[in-house]
Image (cartoon, rainbow, N blue to C red; front, side, top):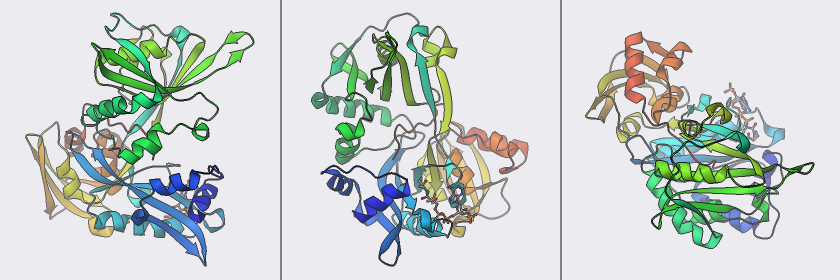
Amino acid sequence: DLFRQRLSRGFGGDGPTDEGASQRFRDLLDLDRTFAAFDGGDIVGTGAAFTFDVTVPGGNPVAMGGTTMVSVQPTHRRQGVLRAMMAHHLDEVAERGEPIAGLWASESSIYGRFGFGAATFRHEVNLDTAAITLRKPEPPGRVRLVDHDDAEPILRALYERMRTVRPGMLSRSDHWWTHRRMRDDESVREDKSARRYAVYEEDGSAHGYATYRQKEEWEGFFASGEVDVIEAIAVTPEAHRGLWQFLTNIDLFTKVEWWNAPVDDPLPFEVTDPRRVQRRLWDAMWVRVMDVPAALEARSYETDGALTLRVEDAFRPATSGTYRLEVAGGEAACRRSDGEGEVTLGIDVLGHLYLGGGSAGAMAAAGRVAGSSEAVTRLHRIFRTDAAPWCPEVF
Ligand SMILES: CC(C)(COP(=O)(O)OP(=O)(O)OC[C@H]1O[C@@H](n2cnc3c(N)ncnc32)[C@H](O)[C@@H]1OP(=O)(O)O)[C@@H](O)C(=O)NCCC(=O)NCCS
C-alpha cells in the first residue's frame, strides 16, 4: 500500500481509494519485477516491469520488459534516484534475456539518456461528424452493440489476429484482459458512459470492433455529445469502414475523439474531406535495445542488404561496439565485428528505428547518425517497414 500511495503521490494524484483498489493493484504487479528506492524506512522512488511479448516487423513476438510505474518523490528529485533505479531495472531485463525494454514516457526528455528511442507514434484524431462523409461503396456487413459480458471473447480473438501482423502490439494475459481492458467500474469512467462494444460482422462472423464511451453534452439546446474511442481494431477494410460509418453517425453525438490511431490508419482516405480528420502526432511507445544481435535477428526486413553499425551506449557501455548486420531473404544475421562501422548511432536511435517506423535519414539530418549518405540511405531502407508500428495502449 505504501508503494501504491507513493506512486500516486509521485504523479501528483491520490489514486483510487475504493475498497478493492489495493487488491487490484497487487494483482497487476509482478512482485519479482517491482522495485523501490528507500530513504530510511520510507519509499521515495517506485518502478516496476511488466512482462510482454511485443510484435516486431515480420510478426514475431519478442520478449520485452515493460518499464512502468516510475516515480520519484518531489523531495528527492534530481539526486540520481531515477538513474539508480534504471540501472537496476535494465540489469534485471538483461538478466532475463529480454532483447528489448519498452515504455511510454510522461515526458519525452527523460529516457533518451537511458538508451530509449521513440519507436511508435500515434495520431490523436478529432472529428466533427457533421463534416464527415464516408466514400462509397457501403460496407456489406452490420455493426452490432455487444453487452460487456459477451464482448471479451470477440475482442480477444480479433486483437490476437491483429497482433500477429502489426508491429508494436503487445501480448495481453488473461489477467491483463480482466483488469486492464474489461474492468469498467465508476472509477475508470471519468464521468463518461460505461464502455460500449461495437462489433462489425459479416455473415455472422466478427471482423472488427471499437470500444468507446459517450459523453452527453449540450450547447444551449443543441446536442454536442462526444464519442470517445478507446480502441478500434479492424482486420478487413470493410470492417474499418463499417465501424467508422457507425461511430460518425450516432445521433446527438457530433464529436468523435480517438486518442490513439496508427499513423497510417486509412480513415482520412475513406472520407470525402480528409482534412476534416484532424490529426495530432505524438510519440507513443519507446524502445530500448538491450541485446543488439538478439534484437536485430528477431525481426525481419523488407529490404535485403548489409551494413556495419557502430553503436554507442553510454548508459550500458558493454553494449557499445561495432556490429555487422547481413539481411538475406528478409532474415538477418548479426554479430559483433571490428572496425569503425559505416554508420555510427546511439542505442536510442537504434531503438527509434527498431520497429520499422523510424527515419534514419531524419536522424542523420539531426546529427544523430553519422555516415556517408549512401550508408545512411542503406540503414534507412533496411530498417524501415511499410506498415507503421502501433502500440494501442499505455502501460
Ligand atoms: C521523472 C522522474 C522520475 C525523474 O527522477 P529523478 O530522480 O529526479 O531523476 P534523476 O535525478 O535520476 O535524473 C537523471 C537524469 O535525468 C534528468 N531528468 C530527470 N527528470 C527529468 C525531466 N522530467 N525532464 C528532463 N530531464 C530529466 C536529470 O536532469 C538527470 O540528467 P543527467 O543524466 O544529465 O544528470 C521524477 O521527476 C518524477 O517522479 N516525475 C513525476 C512522475 C513521472 O513523470 N514519472 C515518469 C513516468 S514515465
